Length: 329
Image 1 (cartoon, rainbow, N blue to C red):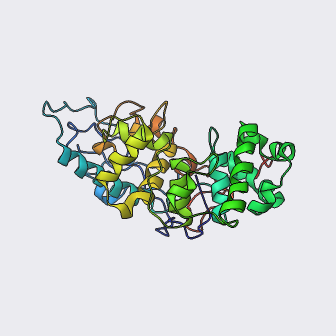
Image 2: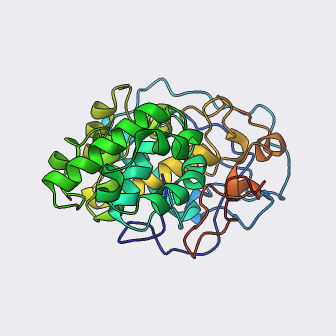
Image 3: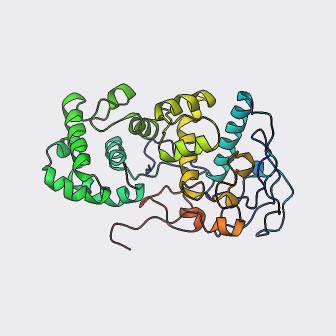
């Protein structure tokens, strides 16, 4: 998910990313941080947030201490301790990603709604490379509702599942034209009635186009909150409810951006970069991925790894490189 800031909740934080205290030792249980070996270079302008440092710094690039993992505490973490740890993770992520934002390009609520529908089962990058031609052809709900299906299918083919997505876009555009005067509604109950729009899409639109707080439970968000032991729930609606009870409502939208940013850049599905993770001391799942600092740094994605981001038109405070247009390389 992404955006150019249009009434969205994208931050205007520090222009340089703070990142990765590498070589972190495994946490002692789940209730508190273990000592870290200190910051290491990440190949960019990133550095560790001060509150993530719990031990004396070592030389950058130094090896992790042998023996790695601390013994797990026999005492289960209390709910209160989990909540405190979760909120600290959020504070640490705010230091690491002060520029966190939705990763879909959009200029208005209609574009964000369509882009979010297109983002199912593909990357935000591929959506951002596809939507310029789509919105040039159909800039308004009225225009899109009158589109020839076969012509729209060709425009959005790169995003995959283009026939089903065309049906959703035509349906939601007609509904906006006929039921909402050509405007995207700013209420959850109205949005989820539109074809192809569920709670996740509705929360993306509400949080980033209307400033209404919402939690976006995508695959990255769900994976990380389970790794962090905030919940064991798999159902996205239940995950949303659990997380909503942990954080104040004012944090919901930005929390979503920070968690999703971290999932895309560091805490990957198949091989998390544990050894380059800035919140390793707070993670009860430390060690599921690569713990060697040097090897872990090679797993970092997007601006954390010195590579282009997913947006063709990122916010001004984004420290990475804009993504290339479709077919540009």
